[in-house]
Length: 291
Image 1 (cartoon, rainbow, N blue to C red):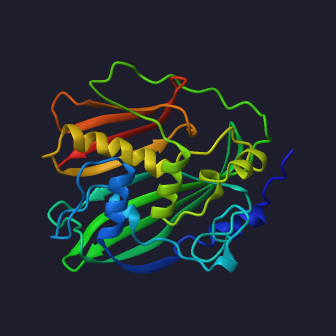
Image 2 (spheres, rainbow, N blue to C red; image 1 turned 90 degrees about the vertical axis):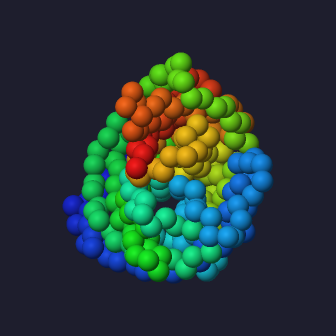
Image 3 (cartoon, rainbow, N blue to C red; image 1 turned 120 degrees about the vertical axis):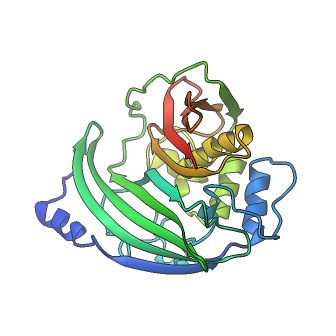
């Protein structure tokens, strides 16, 4: 039985609420070219002030902790801007994003990101004790705010190796928009490199299976979200996305087919999106709304 956090520990973590951080970056071309190649897209983005595709801002403002400050899981050691939650598993649980469509992010722009710890919550779920940290990001260019994002991070205890996965929810079938992907170890490694993500569950199979109890390499949540958004771009290339929200439902692993699905609303103003694993279970649900 894993030990629970004490009330004093929870109170200490919640003291991180309101902490802020500020980063600057430039929306350079090389990461965008790399993501286009990883997604097997023909052609490549150009530097002539092309609008940055939705969610591609995750290529910038990357964590760059010195190697001496990296923990055993490949993440920077706990503390600093984010609270030092002592639970071993850390996952990107979901996000809610809103674009200021009159002021799009563009390749070549100088950017600034203001971040704030919006909340820290301690909960008990079906899988045990969890801590949810919500972080608000505002991305600005020289013209002002361009994007607001709320990023949900969940921390929980690791499952013992061989423990069965929790029961899944069957995914809806027969979507009008569909595309199948086969995320493999190379795709996961390339996406980790593009986002400077050292979390070992995405590239170190022995660590992932022996230490964190997963049956294979874990497909990044933001990569799945990006594949869902790319489905929208494929079927509605002329529409500007004004908002997007997603929630991770179940881990997805390398070497098995992943199907991304979309169903436009009857009024054409939004799209329901979801990802389905090889066993037919829902792995991510999302909604995109057009401007």
